Length: 159
Image 1 (tube, one colour):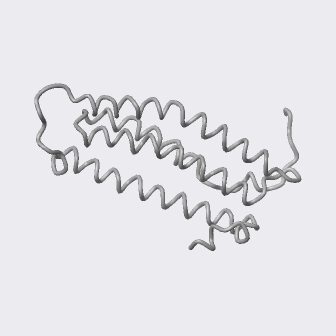
Image 2 (cartoon, rainbow, N blue to C red; image 1 turned 30 degrees about the vertical axis):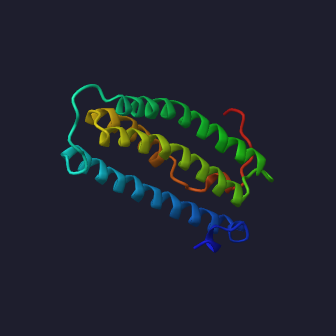
């Protein structure tokens, strides 16, 4: 498995696209398995009995999830584009740069989803975790690694 992610193996567009898609699908499965844990937390299987009074840790976790979400989406897209620019060769992105840029973006998209769903397990209302999770998951699903960035194209500056 580690050979599939090495720089030597990711030297062709096909292998880079294949490895990026494997990681993309793996992260989708991880998100949905965490959603199952979330459902167990909502139904009370994982929730310990609540103590009376405010739950400051759950409030802090939910707020942190929203703040990290609002920062990680633009930062992830910006960092991916900077990695693409660094690995730009002959009107296309090098295969390793394609892989690395997408992996960084996917990692930055999953952090706020995990934080927000953790807030629900700690006692926040359901929608406090589901909305950031849904937004992060939608951005992740939209960024499917199709590989067009590795195909050489002349730059177009208008119609």
